[in-house]
Length: 508
Image 1 (cartoon, helix red, strand yellow):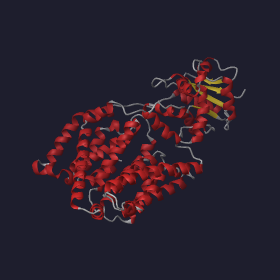
Image 2: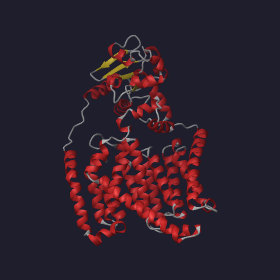
Image 3: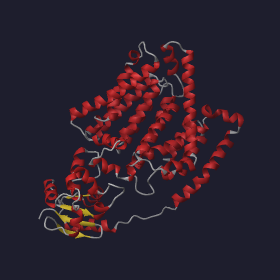
Image 4: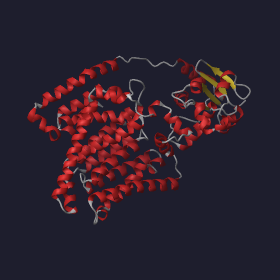
């Protein structure tokens, strides 16, 4: 991973010092870049490295006047490896396509190269659809719809620019992209009957309005899906990564703005304007600046997604060593001395951060769950069906092989519906009503956890309070889980119990 970041930073900046700065920034901001010190980050380990590879390949393609077919094939392969382990990857790639579309509109990317990149994304999406055994969520995603709409726009470029000022043409094409993507996404979802990603829009809606529903609260009540912590920008400030990235970003913006003004003054006709822009050598820098904005928006809305933002900020810092951007420094101050001063200032807090990370030591221990899993192995039949909290169900399936009715793959609409029925055990509904719902799903054993009954991450986020949004008529009643924690009869029978888990037999 660090090798990838070093190569990426070195190639982007054109300097080995840039690669060094990228890796150093990553270590100095390690606590904001990964969750590896707290939990095994499966998606970060098996998916994210391929995004780093993909973005470095994309940088090469954008910088090279005529990239070969081999580079596009490798880009396609890295797309596939990124998307296969992580369904959220489609949203990240959507931001990438949007950033590329922006640099295409202002002329930093020519039509032929842009279409080749889009075709590569389409091929990788189709192959992922096949490798995921026909996952229709991919075909009905905003990412897929956006690819189709932007392809049509790119192929109709001359028609859309006919007798229009460049600014009006840009606005028209952006509107066509947004409206076309929404319309095509709605059409494909209706035709295929897919609602797997419907909750994504509701989550975003809840960020800006007072909208709430069960599925939305299941996400937003978790700290990692809340807004970015107030402390995060302060941590960025202390390691200097925020001011340095801001300097790089503003430099790119100012340079781009000057280029646009210079180009508009030198060219009177739209055709001349277009031709002069298509062969610009700065497209990859503008792309990275726009991608930074996209990652920043994602991280602000959903704290967990700063795992995309922080590493990209580290890559952007490498551009301090770029001669095209900061070559003027060497004429007034030795460039190596300039970088050394920055490293010393970053190290004041950075070394302290590394020491804090190294001091995090622990050992995973969950004796209560081990007791539960051992009991399930030796006291239930191999075909016994279990239900309970999603994380626990994953452990039950992996460790005992018993059938389960719900698990943490919450992106699937059918699974969300089943999980909601299972979690009615933590609502204020009657035991009779909940038992019937569980039996209708074929559940034989329910694993009750007191922590899920009582824990509250913030106001309105206990399971019973979440259910109050769905069943306002039950507000004020005692939660069923609290009743069953004391006495499971007459509707359930307690077969196993320790200080964390309680196994209830559903059918008596």
